[in-house]
Image (cartoon, rainbow, N blue to C red; front, top):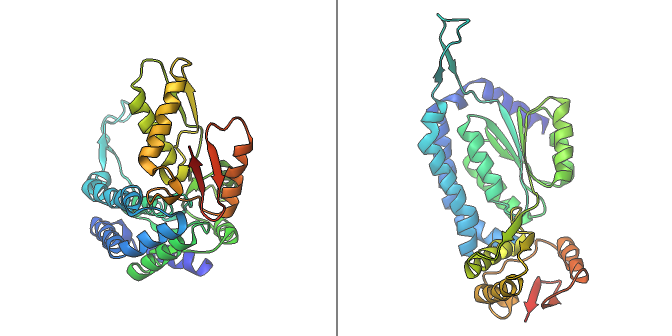
Length: 316
């Protein structure tokens, strides 16, 4: 790991990553790599999360390709110096803001969108002219393997590299000095990342989950609201950081809203969601057991059949 980081520092010091031609070429290579590995990515997402190809295309692969297209379209503008007015203290001076790459970036990605949330920050870092070390989540092992194979095939490790392994690998990486750290995940690990970065005063981007309420008043379009809530909540089996986690509903429409949500669940996933090709699965047994415990709390409006080998399936 130390050798890998040193190789990237030496390469970054050459200045090759700073040119427009290099950045645009690398982004184009990444786009080609994603398209070349599309079948493998589909398979890995199916194995890890039972994602359908439609879901994987829209929320993972297509999203990343769109990010690359956007970056290529705006790259010259991002790199162009911004001229600003001088202050009255220095009337004869000229001033401008020049965007320069920081150096080595470490990206720690999560398991719930194992391809999208790994590649999207890589696109940003590449566009900024940095070298990158990506540490995917070990909780989604098949996606981690495909990411490693894809990156290794198309990029030299002194520029872009994937480090696999469990928490110990992430801890070892965090003990090194980087020029920026990007972490997506929960607040608990986010604090560990921030603490480790503080040792080297490394700037950090933390993309953490939070509360995502939906407010439904008495005047809203209930069928539309229920459709959107159901789609947002059950996409990827609810494993989305901005999925609705509670509803604030006017008492006059509560019963009708529940009926509409029940209707859209059936519409999207059929009478037995467990058999639906469009319904994903909980990532692993530990998370499945954790979620299953919620069924003992509060009042369950529909029955729930627990199949530890697959996922929860709602029974009318």
